[in-house]
Image (cartoon, rainbow, N blue to C red):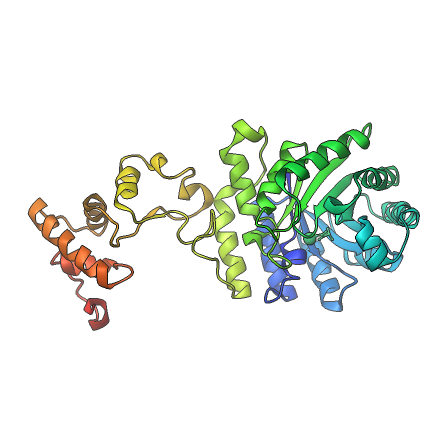
Length: 390
Ligand code: KIV
Ligand code: ZN
């Protein structure tokens, strides 16, 4: 089973335009728990008083999911995380330190030896106060894999049971990222109970592909966000990973505990809270994800939805597939839509109605139900002037 670690409230919230207050975070956290998320990363408690309070409130409220608080490998960060997680039923301190030479030299200005020392000391400190500790090697995908193996060995020996190897800047390719997990699993072997974790950013549009490559290579936790929100181009989208695992068990031989039919409502709640809408072509939860306009596709869908859909809309909580009537649509789709609207007409009337719908479709982007009823000679009693105007 792949554990889903949701970081919408931390990495997602860090993105410009996505900040949430404590009440909003709590509302979303409850929804994530209902969705079946294994771990909710509620924030970075040292970052601000607001972040601390949000983690504290989420930790108090959530009973089934683990609640994680992020901390740099520093005592004051870990203390803040421990304070915020005090009332959590299942707390996890998430300690991170960069391991790439680029970050060590230019950002942290410490040597590899000093980094290993900090990892060992700080993971041990966190473990002394919290039953579950995760260690993340920031910029893992651009780190020397030998050194990365040493860093994870030190973290595991100090008590970390979840080892996360992020592609922090979205640079890795799926082959590379999967290869890194295979190498790490053999270098840091003989530690039963350790769970390897993937955390991918979407700078090259590869975050979901990389996360799946990591799963294929043995990772059993993926860190992701609702709608793929997150720093810069975002994090891996939870709904896409979960659905890919559900649709392709032949390929991945594992799944998640998520209630997939709550994905759509969760996605919409996040949009409502942040005021940022989901692009229509977004996989799984976009408005067009189950919409069909081309006549050939509509005909196929009406005969058997599997012809043009790899997953049913109901499975992810979308009310039903939508046959969109536009200039690419066929007569079968029009007949089906009219029947849905309770309008039964003869074949001759259908032919004429179709001709008029196509003429209108050349002038208008999308044909509404009111347009269809009017052209079929059954306008609604309360249709407004604008409904009937072209
Ligand atoms: O992208 C990253 O490396 C992170 C870590 C803090 C886990 O978000
Ligand atoms: Zn990240």
